[in-house]
Amino acid sequence: MSIATGLINVTVATLWTDAQSPRLIDEESVRNPVQIEAWLERLSPEERKALLDEKRIQSQILYGEIVYILEETGDWAHVVIPNQFSKKNKLGYPGWVPLVHITKIERDDEEEFTDHQIVIVTDKITTLYGENKTGIIPLSYNTVLPLLSEQEDLLEVHTPHGNAFIQKEAATAFDSVDEIPKKNGEGIINEASRFQGLLYLWGGMSAYGYDCSGFSYNIFKASGYLIPRDAKEQAEKGFRVEKEEVLPGDLLFFSYEEGKGALHHVGIYYGDGQMIHSPTPGEKIVIQTIEGTFYEKEWCETRRYWNE
Image 1 (cartoon, rainbow, N blue to C red):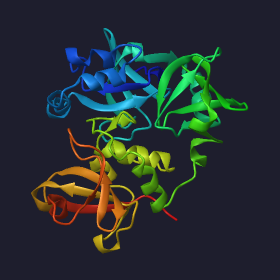
Image 2 (image 1 turned 45 degrees about the vertical axis):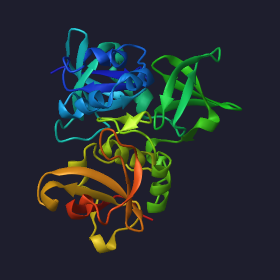
Image 3 (image 1 turned 30 degrees about the vertical axis):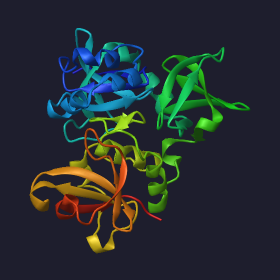
């Protein structure tokens, strides 16, 4: 099978279950440019919940991220995301993306986006600027782009739109992804706390909204750890920790049937018997006491990815 390579060219592309998954109400999420804020503001609580209940969305992909194109059907591409590890496909997380959200590149050019100094967006939302300092598109927290040069107050980056600029105060430069400093548990909690009050989004992987495992994935990615995308697989990696030894920054996992059934949720231990998590459609990222809630009985696994 011939596999093409592409880059996401919108602020955040939604990875749909199939080409028929988007509804009329989702039009702003499948056009280019994506109108992510307008789309989410338009969705009623019931329409947001249906993204989960009807299994319409799989994940999301940030601007400049590499995808491998397995096939094309009409205006859609079946892709995998190599940076989102999944048992669903050994090449990466699979799903469908509108072709207009992808800029194809030659496989040989992939090194320009992988073997390079990088810039990672640390603000929740910032702007990508063109040569004339006019805004091109918004960029989400955790967007990673190759660094070309540093100027007085700007970082020049290589993008699907060509050479462009990010305000230096909105991002941090590193020699490579591997050089992102690995935070300890307290550092992970501090990073997670920035997103208190953000409304849950099923499949969400940007600062416009996270689901439970998307939240843990992104907080750990920003903290120097690349972990699996989904909660079930996150619970199988890292180091197992006994409940009485849990520390801030550990991942807590929850299963139905008082911890004996299917795993359904992940949160980050905050300390003092609390966790920070993105609970469910209609709710916001919150720091919550575990004792006395159904989470206390459903807590089934604890994993540690961080180290001092």
